[in-house]
Each structure stands twice: as C-alpha cells, then as structure tokens.
Image (tube, rainbow, N blue to C red):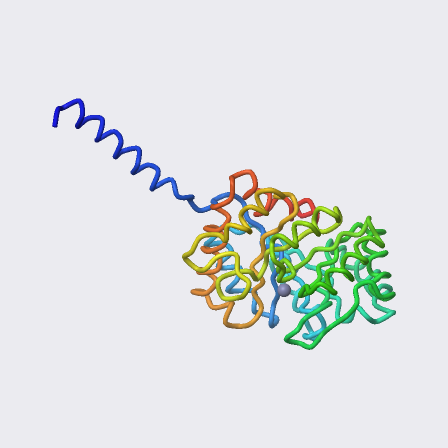
Amino acid sequence: MTRPLLRVLGAALVVLGACGLAAAADYTGPLIDAHSHVSSATALDPYVAAMKRHHIRKVVLLGVGGLQREEAEWIEAAARKYPDLVAAGVRIPDPTNMAAAGQLDVELARTKARVMGEAHIRHVARKIERDPSAPAFMQILELSAQRGVPVVIHDELTPAAFASLEAALAAYRQAIIVLAHAGGAAPAALERLLERNANLMVDLSGMHFQRTPSLAKEKGPLDPAWKTLITRKPDRFLMGIDVWGPPTFEPAMLDRLMTWTRRVLGELPPAAAERVAWKNAAILYRLD
Ligand SMILES: [Zn+2]
C-alpha cells in the first residue's frame, strides 16, 4: 500500500469515527418539568434535590384528578417552600360537577395559578369515562378561555374519545387543552388532531421507560414516529416527568428519569429540543 493511499484511508477512518460519535449528545439547555405531582406534604424534597443535580429550572405541580383529598395543601406548601422552583396548578377533582367551574374561578383568583388540572376524562385503570363536551366541562373551558389558563387533561384516546375531545376543542377555541401523556395516542392520529385544532397542546409526561406507550426505552433511541412528529410540530409539545408514586421519588429513580429525559431531548434538532424542554411551557404557563 502506498503512503498517499494510507493517508486517504486514515482520513476516511477519522470521518467514520466522527460520524459514529455524532450520535446525539444529551440536551444540556434549560429544562422545565411541565407535569408532575406530589404524594405527600414532603414528597417534593428529594425531587428538588434531583432538580438541582440535573439542572431542572422549574416543575409544574398538578393534581391527580380527585384522588388525593389533601393535595391542594401539599402543592401550595411545596410552592411556599420552593417558590422559585415550583409552579402550582389548581386541581380539578371532578370535571363533571356543575359547581366545578365556579370553584375553579375562585381558586384561580386566590392562587394566581396559571394552569388547571389534571382532569381525568378517560382513565381506564380507574374506570373513569367522561365526556369532555358535556356541560360541566364546557363551563371549565369557558373559564379557561376567559382567564387564559390552560386545562391539562388525562384522556386515553379511543376513536370515540378523539371525537368528544375534538368537539370540546371546537366549542371554545380560546381555551387551551393540554393532552397529558399524549393521550396514549399513536403519533399519526395525534398529528391530524393537532392540525385540526390549534388550541390543543400535548404534554409528553409519563412517556418514559417505565410506562407504555413510551417515547424510548431507558437506553434505546427515541421512537422514529415520535421524533418525526415532534420535529414537525415543535411548538405543540411540552416535556414532563409525571412523578407521583413514592418509588418515582427515590433519588436513584429520579436520576434515571431525568437522565433519560435529557437524552431523549438530545435526539431532537436543537431548536425543537429547546421548545419542548422549556420554551413552550414558559409561554403557555407564563412561567418566569
Ligand atoms: Zn399526571
């Protein structure tokens, strides 16, 4: 082999090596967890320690439907203890109650919260099946529109649930609905829903490696269909971790979840990653 040929081969190997290494690096920019919960008055302490380790700027704390009676106090206590880190949402215990919108209005005025939820619309494991286009929820959407405060919903989408969600979205175009956990929907179906409804946002919380559907396994690549959709519509998605149960507050588990989050975001084009990681949440929930 001649020396020039060796040099060419050497250069080619360097290029190949660089391509191999060019596998996406973790996202290192600002990060807001746009959807998590607390399971007790002190649950957030290990989470805040993990936020500091992983440079998470803020966490939006939401209610878990109507499951935890003392939750509003826990969330408010967390916000008082960590005012720079916690954005407290107003819980929606029962979105079918005709008094709900009036109570939410009072709570929004009192707390100055910039998000309501999460409301359980369709939650199979809890045997909850509600119609988001029914009158009580319509009033909540009217309130959302009046106050400019988005509503986060848990709605495991079937074809029928897609239709009722779309009816709700169409009834109040000034109200913004945030579909938690992407509604468990397939990316293609979700893309059509996003295209038809500008007042729909999607949070990707709870789509981590411990749940199904997930965006990616713990060490595996971001699902190509999700990567394509998020890259096409980066202004419509928010990242969240959705901690709740005590096992998710274990420091080692928090490290795994937060590391996974930054790794998955790192697979998106940098501008899209920034939008999903924090910019969309900062705008939507008016976080500073
Ligand atoms: Zn949640």
